[in-house]
Length: 378
Length: 67
Image 1 (spheres, chains in turn cyan, red):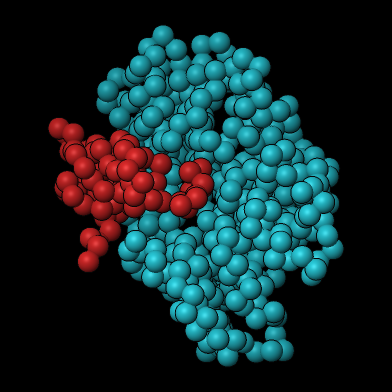
Image 2 (cartoon, one colour; image 1 turned 45 degrees about the horizontal axis):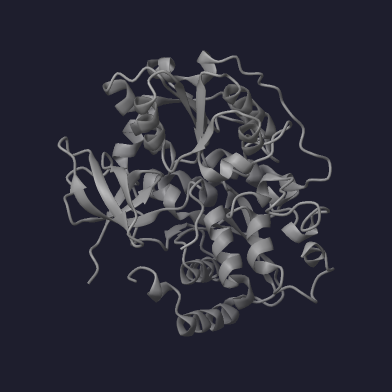
């Protein structure tokens, strides 16, 4: 398949791995953060880290939108779903994210009308098919997903749909990266940039990272060779003493992004003054709410929402995992109390969460190298 | 291909099979033969037969045809 096979070639991977080994300074430890959960998934699934020298460490970042939703927001969604008028719709993974009082799938089991959709447009169609019910879409995601919600709302408005609402939890990628860069407990050398977010926002929003923090960024695709080549490009920059934003994913990402998407986003959304991120706390101007022009569709205005802040379970260390401070297997409950079947933390829910990705693909590769925690549950 | 539909950074190549009257909504088919309704607003001028990268029901860009 074009765009896939050529990026999974074992020979090319081995050659790149050799070139990378020739680039690193053996006396230096390199910490490279992949911001996006898609990259984390690829790294574990294809064993990309095994092709890197021991002193090149990949740190998993906060770019899985399911993983960064705080428990309180899940509880709010459950509260909305508790209204008998409501059909609450969401993407599949969101149903299993634990809140302070259970998950949406548990609420569904208890009688709430919660349904999975593949896109906000499916939710809008559901609203049109059920005119006597309120259909609420639990919107999560970064800039890649936000245009989908925005375009659906524009259609709902144009088509005069009055029973479709959005519970908006869209977030933006740049503020948490800045928060991580300011974090004293995490020292990073470079970033692997989020490829599909960049199809919308382009490369420009990432220029502050080399300009203000002196760290290279390489926007990367999602196949194993994409990630490996991005690591190579980063190490080349570091070896040359350069520091800039480079685009490894040129076959998809235009430098300027999608200007049409920018227009749509600015019409439908407004920046929230602040928003709570799981593990990162409150970050200012890091999330989107519906703009006043779309107030009629805003679930936060229509329903009584508790808005209670819920502390993460004590045993769960998702926060540290999301910041890349610890690896998934270093969490106290990883693979024992917390598994993909019974997640305690959000990182174990989505297949792109660092813990689930490691649990599914990486734990056997490390056998013998780390204290045996992962295997206890299996 | 396994990927997370929720993640903001997953997108899937799909083929535009038919376009509705207003030109903004299409029926697209993925590599496994699944069909879905896709919004074309961000890739204006896209016609039947094009390959697009789709995320959460929106075509984000047109990918070059397979050679």
